[in-house]
Length: 282
Figure 1 (tube, rainbow, N blue to C red):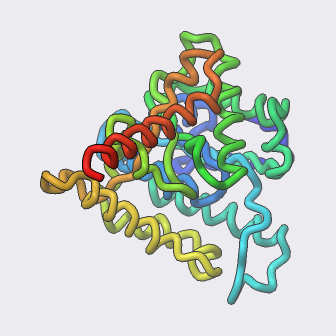
Figure 2: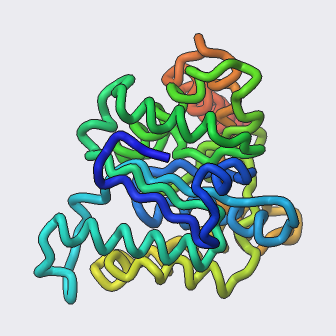
């Protein structure tokens, strides 16, 4: 298995051949940066831990350059920091018992180019090498430019496959913009409350971020708990943690469906919902 960037990293925790490990994957997450997977697709990690025959695979598309740093990491060059983050992602894959962890090492500037051939070829190779039941991507209303770009490149790659080879379920997950604003009928609730000790440990693996100035561990676990409690006002909590997702499957079922139009339709449904409630009581 070979990818286009010379710094691409292939890690198989149990030592199987990469092609064999990738073929086993039933739940695949394609994310922008190291630690995004553990924030957005934790439900997929635990689903595979709890179900025989299921296997989780992670893909980090960019090289992790430009991350903020303080304390013990303040002196590091950007290249050194990329190496630290690469190793942290490997540790997370080992701890979460991923079938495979791929880090493609593309610069964000390249990923942001529409139909970038190297990025597209790498992602197409990955999607063609497995038949995942569920694919977790960033959601298109995310406020991080690279997250949206990685999602778009993944959609392009899936659309380049024959229809019969495309995943049956594709979900866009929250990281840099929550999805609690979606109307309830548009929300997909991912159960992120399982294995609570593992949840914290996976996030703390990314020490360069957590002690380097961004407490993603506290923020992520708090958000999951808040979503579970504030999901509904007239029922008791069904889960102890929720990650919200948007169903992106229509985008891979219809190549002509615009990502922009698809996303704005969700916002319009929220606008209509708010307007109706305000008119009714104000």
